[in-house]
Image 1 (cartoon, rainbow, N blue to C red):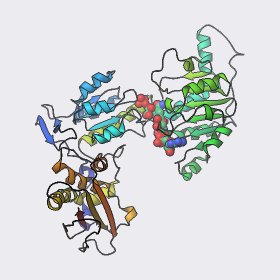
Image 2 (cartoon, protein in one colour; image 1 turned 180 degrees about the vertical axis):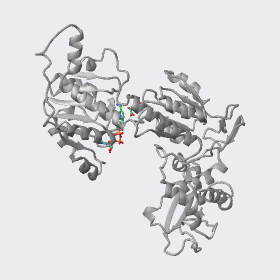
Image 3 (cartoon, helix red, strand yellow; image 1 turned 60 degrees about the vertical axis):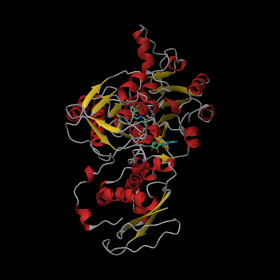
Image 4 (cartoon, protein in one colour; image 1 turned 90 degrees about the vertical axis):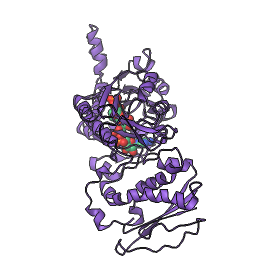
Amino acid sequence: MAASASSRLLSSPSSLSWKSPLPPAFGVAVALPRSKRTVPRFVVLAMDGKPTVLVAEKLGEAGLNLLKEFANVDCSYNLSPEELCTKISLCDALIVRSGTKVSREVFESSSGRLKVVGRAGVGIDNVDLSAATEHGCLVVNAPTANTVAAAEHGIALLTAMARKVAQADASMKSGKWQRNKYVGVSLVGKTLAVMGFGKVGSEVARRAKGLGMHVIAHDPYAPADRARAVGVELVSFDEALATADFISLHMPLTPATSKILNDETFAKMKKGVHIVNVARGGVIDEAALLKALDAGIVAQAALDVFTVEPPPKDSKLIQHENVIATPHLGASTMEAQEGVAIEIAEAVVGALKGELASTAVNAPMVPAEVLTELKPFVQVAEKLGRLAVQLVAGGSGVKSIKVTYASARAPEDLDTRLLRAMITKGLIEPISSVFVNLVNADFTAKQRGLQIIEERITLDSSPESPLEFSPGSDCQRGIKICQCHFRVWGG
Ligand SMILES: NC(=O)C1=CN([C@@H]2O[C@H](COP(=O)(O)OP(=O)(O)OC[C@H]3O[C@@H](n4cnc5c(N)ncnc54)[C@H](O)[C@@H]3O)[C@@H](O)[C@H]2O)C=CC1
Ligand SMILES: O=C(O)C(=O)COP(=O)(O)O
C-alpha cells in the first residue's frame, strides 16, 4: 500500500473506525452491520441519543464525569453473574475492575449490543478474551495508572513482612507487649528476585535497590536494556529461585504462569525464603505454599491476591501465623484510582466513538502514523472485498483471496492488519449474518475457512506509478480490480 503525498497530508486518524461510530443523537435504534448471532446489530440509543455504559465496580469520580458527558452511566455494583447477564443486553459498554468475571455468557447475553469492555486496571484474566473476540467486542484496559500504587504496595508488604508489623500490631491490639516474639529480618544486602520485570516489577526493583537490596529479575520477555537501565541482572527462572532471599511476583496470570510456584519450584528455593505476591493468586499453588510454610522452606509470605477472591473465611493460608494478607489493595490509592478511572473512561468513550484504542487488548494497536498512511485505503479495502465476492464468485464460495500491497515501506515495516480486516469485512458481511470488525476479522476468516494470502511488493519509484501485475498462479480465478497499488485475486 503506497503512502501517497495526499495521504500524508490527512489530518489526525482518530476518526478511523474499527467499527461504525455511533451515529448522532435522536434515533432510537440504529442498525449497524449484522452480528454473529443473526440478530441485527443495533446501537440502541436512549431517547437522549446517548449509549449506555454499565459501571459494575466502583470507579473514580473523574472517570464517571468523563463518561457522563458522552453516555448514560449505570453504576450497579455487586451484581450476581445472572444479574450482569440480564443487564448487559441493555448496554453498549461495560466497565469492571478485578472483581467481576466477564464470562462467555456475558458476551452471549449481550446479543451483539456490547461493543467494548473496559478493564479499569491492568490484569485482564477476569475477562474471557476469546469470547470477546469471537463476538467482535473490543477489550481495553488501563495499563499505566496503577503501576506505582502496585509497586508501592509490594514494597509495603515486603517491609511489613520482614518486620512482622501486622502480627505485632494484632498482638498489641489484643493487649500484649511481645518484644521478643516479633524479631524481624533485615533487607539490606539481601537478594530480591523480581519475577516479571514489566511496569510494576521494574518499579519494585528501583525501590528495593533504594533499600539496599541486591535485585535480580526473571522475565523471559524483558529487554536487556530495561534491566540495565534499572541496574538489575536478568537471570533464569531456576537461578532466581535458587539465589533469592525474597521473591516478589509481578507477572500476569496466563496458562504459562498459572501455579508457577508449586511443590517442585518451592523445593528449589533457599530455606527461609520470603514471598510477596501482588500479581495474581493463581500464579501460586496455594496448597503447595501452605506446605512450604509449614515445612519452613518459606519463612513468610505476604499476599495481596488469591486464587479465589474473596478467599474462604477459614482459609488456612490466611490464618497462618507467617502470612500477612491484604484484600487485593495493590491498586487502591486515591491517586491510582482517579488515574485509572480517567484512563479507562477515555478508552471506552473513544471506542464507542469508533476510534482505534491505544490500550486495546484483543485488537491490533496500529500506530498513529501508520493509521494516517492507511486511512485512504480503508474504505477501498472493504469495497474491493465486496466487489471480489460479486465478481469472482458470484456471491458465495470465496475460499481464497490474494492481496498484493505495493508500498515504499519495507515488507517487515508494513502493518496490514487493518486493511486485511476491512477486506475480510467486505468479503464476509455481504453474504452472511456475521458482523466483522478489527477485533474479530482474523478469527472469523479462519472460522469460515477463508484463506487470505498477502504479498508485499516494495516500491522504489514514486508510489503514484501504476503497477502491472501478473495473475497469481495459486488462485483458480483472478480479476484485476484496480490498476493502482492494491489488487485482489480470488478463487
Ligand atoms: N494487586 C494489584 O492490585 C495489582 C496487580 N497487578 C498485577 O500485576 C501484573 C503485572 O502488571 P504490570 O507490571 O503492569 O504488567 P506488565 O505487562 O508491564 O508486566 C508483566 C511482565 O511479566 C512478564 N512475564 C510474562 N510471563 C512471564 C513469565 N512466565 N515469567 C516471568 N515474567 C513473565 C512480561 O514479560 C512482562 O514484562 C498484572 O498482570 C496484574 O495481574 C497489577 C496492578 C495492580
Ligand atoms: O490492575 C490490576 O491488575 C489489579 O489487580 C487491580 O485490581 P482492581 O482494579 O483494584 O480490582
